[in-house]
Length: 461
Picture 1 (spheres, rainbow, N blue to C red):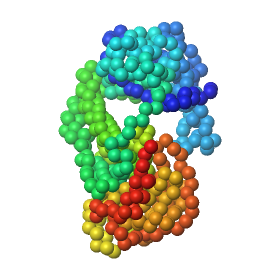
Picture 2 (picture 1 turned 60 degrees about the vertical axis):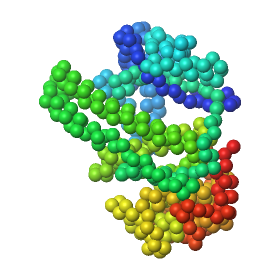
Picture 3 (picture 1 turned 90 degrees about the vertical axis):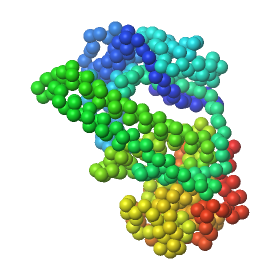
């Protein structure tokens, strides 16, 4: 199938809206989602469904498309052409576990003139949870066109996601010449090292920890009820289903609170700074630590990174991703010396070379910010990404994998960075040095040469 190409000056984006469907609309939504699941199972098992004519053809196209993608992923994984974990043979989707969803690509898909209702094929008109006259106005002005709509039952509520072709409308950031180094953590969700020398911390709300008392109480109630048993075919009692809904309601509230706080944080950062620097964290590996896995999942480092990948495109913000093996916490932000060991329980960084004493997260934030100052928009990198290294003549190259796994006594010479909306490219080869005599951003002052270099590097359209 030919890939869709947007018009010049337009881009493909998505909008997710909550629905307030009536009882009849809910029944039709569930029917279409079930049709998509049945079509998927039919394609896997090569059997037919007896109620084919009751639903829109889009429901079956959704299941068939998912089945085709599942078999394609399986074939590529078996032949070694697909990255990631090994993919097995597609299996049936359970009615109890599969997520109810259906995608529409043709037919009557529109937001009504009042901006409060949505029309979908065969389902009809559904009320939106919140009015969106802004989307309707952009459609009428020709700045937005709906390509497809996907309805999905998520956390007990129905949502619709539009894939749209919309005109590029960049909004200038508040401080286009400013940059910020973002060091993520558990105790403090994010430490922000500003290019003006200010360091601020974003407290970790820990929504899951705060809800543990409610979850334990709800879990005990569920355990006392007669639940389902797949081995014996026992069905759950009504009291179990009621208790399970109450427990899920707590989980849904935690997820909604987390999603709201993360969106507010990432939106604020992308709307204020011209350059963002983040770390390429191994979130999956961190989640395998049995003592930190729950808190790592609650902090949602991967979701923060995902949002900081697509949101900068709205403002033309530059995103710099530090290499995964860059020792940002173990490197002195003043002189560039690297400590061999720095356990997690040690929260204060003490440099053995220059005597710098600083919070380890603040130190890492300064080093990340220095990486942005060393990285130009012409894919040239100077120095080692350390706050104390201000040598403007050193140009180092990047290796595909980045720094070595083993901690060095000198700074790594490979820094891997990716700007939002662009593909990585090679760097000119060269040599680098660790350390320097000029104080880093912690001192709050910069030399005239560095100020001019920073303005040149961080300038946006």
